[in-house]
Length: 152
Image (tube, rainbow, N blue to C red; front, side, top):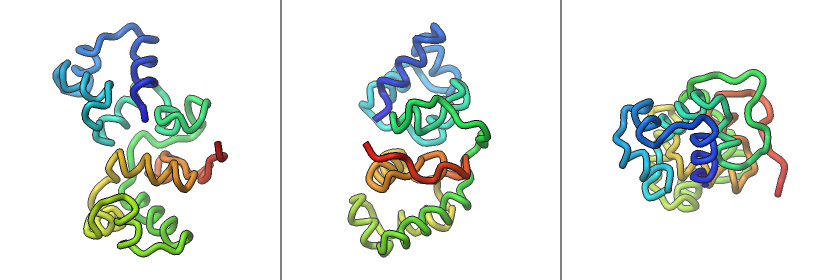
């Protein structure tokens, strides 16, 4: 999902896993677990790394070769993200329960994402974006364009 790009970016700036962990306020071993995808990096940490490396989430997820977008917000907008997720779900004629089943999560998680209570889980974000060819940066309210990414 993102491990190769995180390692490449870290090596490009000649930083150790410990140094990246320090930037995130994590131990070296916790960051190592994220970089190797042994555990999933929370979206707030992934966003912080994107800002640090000046790259988009779409680039980290390997959805695009372009490293960043011209006008991008640094922060995730949970309320806008919720609206965009709801719109995407409705455009694809899915109920919250159907989207929850597709992601193997609960209806209450989808509801919380759509209300902007929680940021979308990294794994769910990746799966949604990959399946529907939508930009992760767009879905999280970091950019307004492009909404959709080219198919593989």
